[in-house]
Structure formats: structure tokens, C-alpha cells
Length: 306
Image 1 (tube, helix red, strand yellow):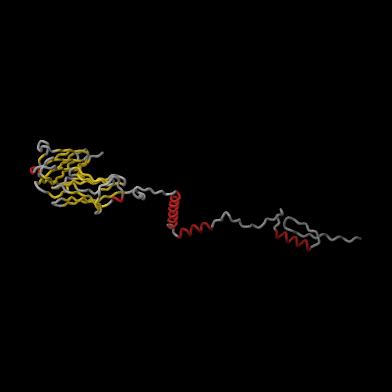
Image 2 (cartoon, rainbow, N blue to C red; image 1 turned 135 degrees about the horizontal axis):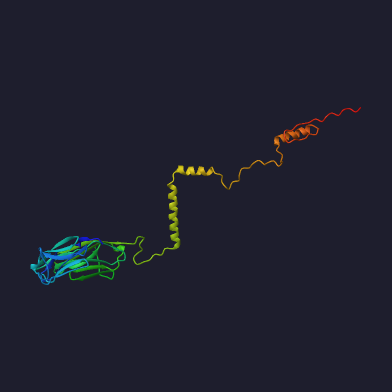
């Protein structure tokens, strides 16, 4: 596998926290080899020595920094830096610590995503505010109630909507509203669920197609291909093929009749034979027929008897 410089697939988000509560920064990082991660506040390196109680972790591309109990002194600019042999990348966000009330704020907003039909989909947000905001999920403006198909959960400031088995009809615009007595905040993203390549049946139903229907469909496709093939030919080409076919003798027609051959073995032509026959009828003298030509010989006159 080739090396790849670090990149942030999800950068840091700014956080507003009440003094004495927890504050969490999180970023998603990709790169190969796996990058080394460092944290800074206002340019100073963060560690358990410089910030007692801080929790720093990096696993499966997730870099996280948690301050369990914040004070006003923890306010500032927080930076995460990822480094490997191919390069370096950084992401920076603000931490604001307040002593009183604070309006809702998204430290992690909804992210638009695309998923395959039948897969599980999870939409996460992180919301802070003083007092703790009321968080609600919506799809195309309609509030989503927690159910076996759409489960809404909360872990600290992390709120999640989990779709157990997504279908194309679950696609749409999803939003999260966070409200308290100080203010209101909204985060919106698009969710697209891709169906199968062929026609997708209705959710959790099956459609049975008979063999006869499949055969009819294939036959219709074949007929369309044949029509397209003949339509592509020009009229001139078709005429040339037809003329070529008529010039040939069709095998089912009888051959032309020929005049019958004479049964006689004599080489005498029929016309000469007919003339000889007429001569024999006109003369009583015997005629000797020679092969060719025909000659008439008169018998000698007998001499008188004395």
C-alpha cells in the first residue's frame, strides 16, 4: 500500500462548557502509515503533566481530548496535529468556559452521508449548553420518535439517531434542534440510501416473477434488437440483395424443357429424312437410301425380245 499524508475527515468543533462540567474535543484522521497525534492549547503542548486530569486518546482514526472538569483557565484555542512520513495536518477549535448560562452549541454537527439499502445508519451530534438543552431529531420537518426502527440515544453530550435497517424511503433531510431557556441551535444534513441495481421491492415485502413473464420480456428484447438491425440498413442495400437473389435459379423450380432427341440412330437430319420420304412417294422406282446424300437411280430399260 502506498503512503498517504494525514488528512482530517472530520475536523475539531468549538465547544462551550459550563465551569465544572466536562469538555470534549474529537477529530477523525486518515493517513498511512498511521499518523502520530499531538495536542496543543494556545501553542503549548498538552499532556497529563501540563493539564492535570486531561484524557488524550487516538484509536481507529479518532483523536479525542477530554477535560473532565473545566475552569475559566481552560478557555483558549485547542489544536490537534497529525504527522507521518508523508506529511502533516492540523485542526483548531475554541473552548469557551462560562460561569453562568450558555445557549445550545454543536461541538459536533450532523454529517451528510450515503449508505446501502439494508445497512445500519447512525447520525451523531454533540451538543452543549447551560442548562442542558432539549435535543430532538427531525426528517423532512417531521419529528422522529424513538422506536425499534429509529432509536434515539444519549451519552453525555453525544446524541445519536440509529436506523436499524435503512431503506430508500428513509432518504431525506435530517435535522437536530437543541433548545434551552437561553437559545436554540440547529444542525442539518442529507441522508441518501441507495437501493439495488434492479427494481427494489417495497420495504419488507417480496415480489415473485413467473418464468412466463421472464420469457416474454426476453422475447420482446430480441424483437427490438432485430427491428433495430433492419432499420439501420439503407434501402439501396436491400434492393441489391433482392436483385441478386432473382438472378439465381431457385432450387424448387423445374428446369426448362428441352426438345426431345430423335429415337433413330441414323445421323440423317430430320429435314433431309422428310425430303427423302416425299421422293419415295412420288417415284415407283425403288430407291436405295444411302447415309448421305440421297440419290435417285433409274433402272435400265429392258431391250426388246427378238
